[in-house]
Image (tube, rainbow, N blue to C red):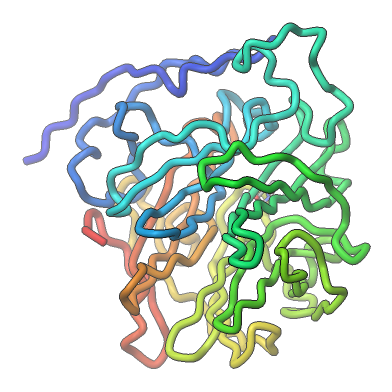
Length: 353
Ligand code: DGJ
């Protein structure tokens, strides 16, 4: 029988002006055994809770880089007070904290700056919303491009912008370049995808989240060519993750119910620009931690499809959001089974990738 040990640890150990994010949380230390244990708290190699929500993973030269939203304590913890956190791993189980890849512009205490050097006018100032960051490597420039969903401070979710940043190294520091609506269109939940021909695409929930867009990027992966295609029209799909497998493009998404879980849906297409055919819910089994089944995605929401390098295996990544305390949101990572007529994702308490 596995013993559950309750312990207190310090999360991230960072503070910003007026916001305490040095909270101690109760953790279940039975989760740190070299396997993926969905729905439990996960720890980095320093013993701190991994804080990288709504994330995406880039494989680059033997290492996986996990970029995610650094959430803070409380119901307003989805506001960006720290920035985009990055972790690295070679086995997808053991994660090393590589720091804040893209900090909010005015993180004076952490950066040792005086408050007079704050830059509250920046689009990514403390209190904005930075969600679903994704990073891709651009072979032409040798740089790393980060795109994320940005909401401006004090404007709720009305701005619906994309933020773009660039770095020379995967761990950053990323330099924030600009934010705007791509091709003039609203953009919220999003992912990036580099196709076999080297072309990169930004796929995002647009048109008040009703219809998604696939926008082709320029060959520096920092701008748009103007080619844009509407997909999943009027299907209100969020939490979009995409991968290529068996010559087809597989897209997982959720419905639009804020932080509350709903039923996942899988789509397939012959080309990245679609058309995407809806296949239904790929989830199977029950999450015993919250006793929630596949019709509510085990209490979670899709966030990314990760191909395991050098194999034809894919990991489906989800977030179990905790809107009362965003910092305590959990991760669900499960293998995608492509063997049947329709790919399925079954709950596993514990597995090795
Ligand atoms: C659902 C989205 O998938 C999340 O990323 C976040 O934007 C919430 N909505 C906000 O309610």
